[in-house]
Length: 226
Image (tube, rainbow, N blue to C red; front, side, top):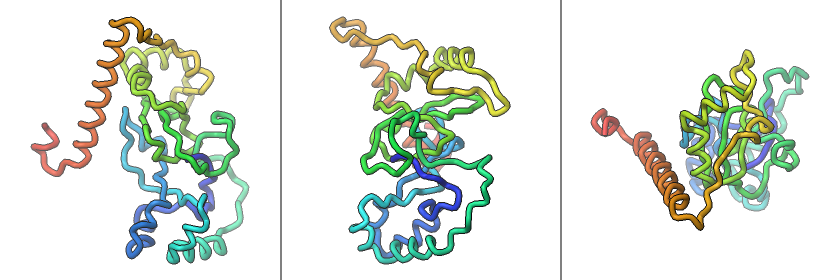
């Protein structure tokens, strides 16, 4: 996961293109990293994205997938010139100012909490295994921390955010600087009550994530109600 430009980018494809390119080479799906945008975010578990970034960090293995290699070669020869209008351009990843990395696709996955930089209703999705790339309209806290995600998604957490972040025509601007001032009680694990409270919150988040994943797989109304 990392960052790369979306506009005129041959490495960004939709789900149909991914399925077509990997129809006879299922193992090639490892090169397609799901790309999250603000509309894909919800509390704890993101929606299934409709776009993918082709990860090219291992060129040797990628060339073994001949259909994919031929597709990338053809795309690179037909990329139109940039019009120069970047007003609505998105980047697939956190900005290099936020992460400390140059804006290229990183080789190593980064566990993170993902949130929209501008939103009418701030939400925080947990990417515990670093499975997703994200656009520059999203921010990321580079931690696998269900406890912190629970606090940020709570009613109290949302109250603090909307009263401490400026409101714009695009919604509340949840900048990294503003989020860095968010007050969080750090548990003292030497104290039994702090440890028990932390464990209970993490357990509730895990239960919530399991239910959301089950809901996404459910096919009947009865399953969804349960």
